[in-house]
Length: 491
Image (cartoon, rainbow, N blue to C red; front, side, top):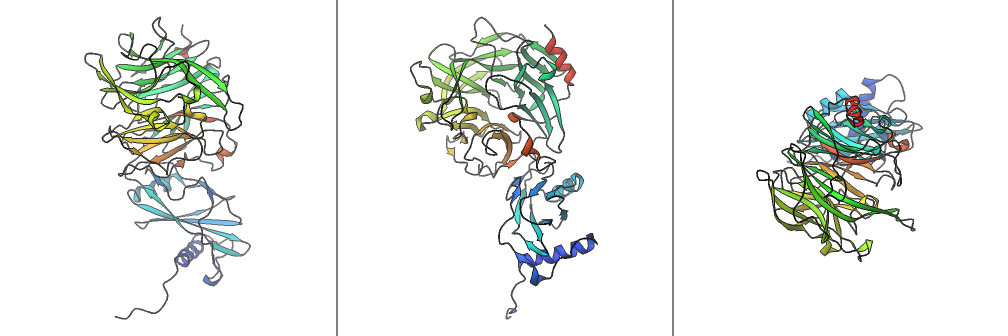
């Protein structure tokens, strides 16, 4: 049969007709949409903030409220699910605020699929349609809670700071512990056992210092400094069983750069690994890590608890700070005998002229995620720092262009299904670290990262704290702040 000679109905006109019907049915006020001949096509996607274009999201994430960064008096957006569901949004002061209930229902209807978002704007009496973009909704959800430290971006002293818990399914944030209740002491290095809030700890530094350890309903304050250790415990890693915690012990120095593109350098002069038995409260060196031959730091366990991973470099006092480069190693562990095997190299970043920090193993045991940078051990002020994924079955380093940026990308945390990560980045303005979420697909590639959603799309414009050490957890921390404070104040 001969095909109809008429031209296909243009996509943007189809959206315009849909918009006109929606406006007619949904509102009797405001300017009416012009006819097809008067509708202009912008031939580009709209500029929005946060940038949610072409991303993959979990089906349990809070609404992606956004702001349109275009000229115009009126804006309307349409969300059209692949399975037929539709949501219409009307901007107020150029901000699109989505109903949480409608958003939850919309995501549930489109889980494992995608939806298309189209924006229309009106300048004067002229409507314009922007090119639509797609947002994919993964089958796999993200762990529902995120714990982080909020801290001003200072260098020498601490002031107002705290640990906070965010419900990722909504915009609810609550303090875990704020240092204004404990004489402005520093709180840092919160850690959990396999994403469980039943086993957690954090350090307090200052006049009421110590390490606060929670196991189930029990909370205790511990002094981790021993005669055999370089320092009290610093960077922690819970064994999956909750029976042990590995710590680094570090003698840390801090330097300031004279060049504007470099701000600060934090490095170890000595570091070892220790292990704390939570039942006996005993501390022992991790064999092979004590002494002056190597410096070890950033311990992390394999999900089965049979290997302790860490960053390691050769200790040499004559090595310039910008030539110190760390590799990722591991040591076998027998939890029944509480004994260790021999250390073996896993990822030789130094052979590539780079340094590897913050090793974290995916909960399924398939991948090592770490931060690569030019030198040193503390990459949060290194603009070149990027996330690096290593396939543990092959040793292959997998380039991750979609998740990295031109600025610092550093600390990261896995969701327990090994599909999502949350990580800190300075890509927003080069100064304040913000948190970004990315999806790992079945090919081992992270997808375009998106900024942690907030109720107010303009929230980050005047929020002058850095997000530090994001940790995903599967259940909320139920301890009241006053209980932490009471335990911290105990002698």
